Image (cartoon, rainbow, N blue to C red; front, side, top):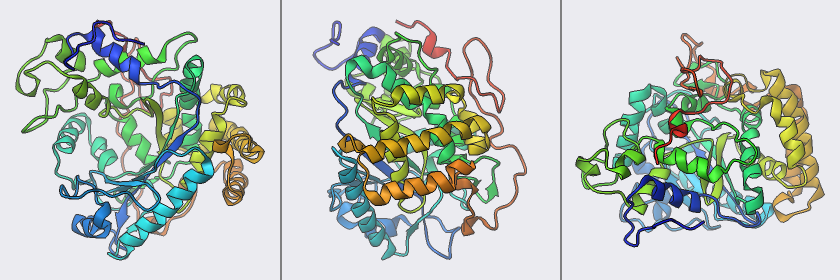
Length: 465
């Protein structure tokens, strides 16, 4: 796609120009040949679970690998196998792999980098949690950066769970190529339709801030509690709908979280990118027309379950214990191959909108349990067939996936159902968590907790061009 009347100075002058730019870059067409994984962990000191993360110790442990967000003078050297380290607002630590052309290479590099990173942290008394939500400590932002200060302010305006999501949770994120142009819509759809099943099967955060929340994935419950234009799953597009155009419309109609500037990055609440580029709002950091760089940065402040960035970043899986982060990566790659995608969509169809139930109930939900019981053996079969480098699993990984399938998935269990010694003192749920899920649907008001119809946003459907 080419841009109509694209500016040569990088300044955007119309909503249509902004939408055209986003639509032209969000899906990079081509055969699916690469994949990547990001692994997040929350850190703690054994024997001192309530102590906040000591960023000084993290900085010292990381040494030359320390990101600039923690040490502005650092060169942020890659880890030995090529991964890069980042630190999240609450002190969570993350490895982002380099793209790899085979599952074996991807897992080998991340396994080596994880071991190296954990060794560095252990020298300073820091270990990763096995859960995807902090079981003890309250949500507390540790990084004092303008982006995170603005994010905290926006999230606090919605409710208490945004701060928990940004400071007290960890995920496994899998990135895959968007694929050929002719198959983009189907690939986009299947990644979302798989979401509730994989969220339920890998739910791993039943305790947060010292209490049992009543949700198998408290992490995803936090993200489902925020403004839907920024974090909610989209409705599954009808056949023939252009997902690039729909994503572009969503981007420009989502309120700004922040705008980079010299002082505070905060913006007035509710101002969308469309408002800014059209000139309807001016003043402060908005007292100039936006640029392509501003639009790219705005895209980075949207946190839906799947985020297109040329490639497709799948964000809905809880962090896993030990080396089990490799399981969702392998399952996702297996179940999005062309040979099985039609069958996968058929199996997911009855539960494709069950995001709330998946986060709350895990595989206690009969429909999600039935879908998982069919999909996980299918993933094992694809990986055993070894028909493509990205779906050729090392034998130990395939053995582990078969074990998890038999001992957990086929029994309707998820990681949240397993005991964790760190949670033995957790109190019972004393109030609904979250107190309300803001998942409005087209043509009606906010959904009640437990509603499972596909969430959309009215803003994403308004014609603002």
